[in-house]
Image (cartoon, rainbow, N blue to C red; front, side, top):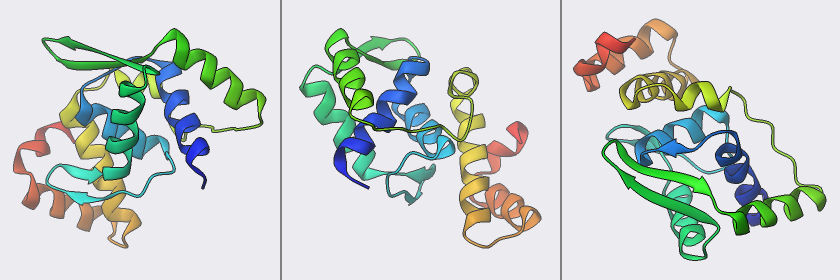
Length: 145
């Protein structure tokens, strides 16, 4: 997938809802099926590519960040909305696999548990095996399953 398709997909997420916290952004991006390469990190699926693209778009003034007590809030700027509209007019399309606004309301722990389970199942574990592995790796997440 080309670079602009990835940017467009990220903009689709941020157009649905502001996302509070980098961890939430990572997990929502994974659950929504953004076209970035994810690997298994300390807190579930993680994409270095997504981090790099997000940081670059913040630096270019297309994504705004705001520090809040809950974490950094990510949202599109007016300039970002204009670029998003141009990408859409050029034919870029992305349909999230999940309801992004609903995901944005979930706790980071809940998102991490959901994303980790999905990641492990996609790697060939049964749902029961994935749950057992999640409980072993991150026992504190058992309460949010």
